[in-house]
Image (cartoon, rainbow, N blue to C red; front, side, top):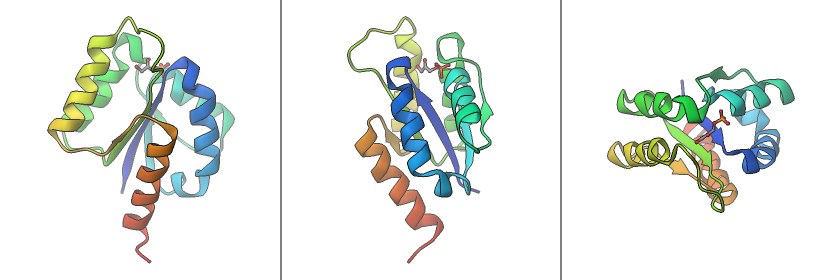
Length: 127
Ligand SMILES: O=C(CO)COP(=O)(O)O
């Protein structure tokens, strides 16, 4: 089954909730995993089931990165706040880097996330 990680910084959480609502039918067919707070918001505010790792700043980003290293993930949507420094910047950099190492599709903005989801949709259900 296709497995996708969903992560958003606090300023971007409304955006990821909106994105998830827009693609809820597709996402219901995908195995979802998220960082702690993002995952809780998705679980509380949609009908989707999502596995929750730790919160990003306390290791969640690294836990997602570990799944990439194990080739368990087909994609990562990580809506980052481009205007605020994060205390766990080294963990964020590690996650982005390991996506590059494994050529795991990574989207860090709304529009690129939509491209990623459309691509996963075509892969799941070729037309
Ligand atoms: O900080 C994050 C990503 O770097 C996201 O973590 P939360 O989903 O727990 O807020």
